[in-house]
Image (cartoon, rainbow, N blue to C red; front, side):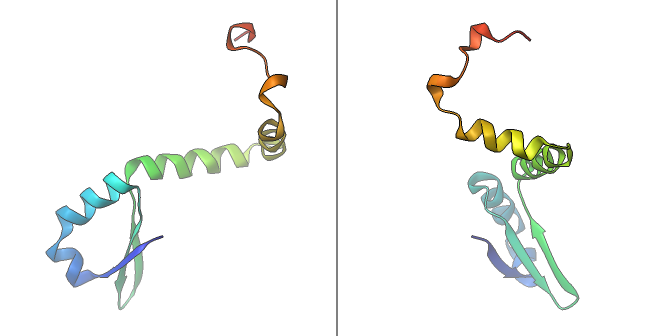
Length: 83
């Protein structure tokens, strides 16, 4: 769930709001007359860009869904994986 604030409130509490976005990984929507902007933590940003990257690879979505549906018993032990 995103917190929505005005640009005036952002100016007043910028440090607190940025700390909050980092601590709780909760996006903050800044509402202005010319449009809205969103403040997110670096961790959330990296997560979003990694997801976009993975989904841009042909067939990756299907592989991820197949892996998610695989039971733990059907998985290889970490030591058996050849990197």
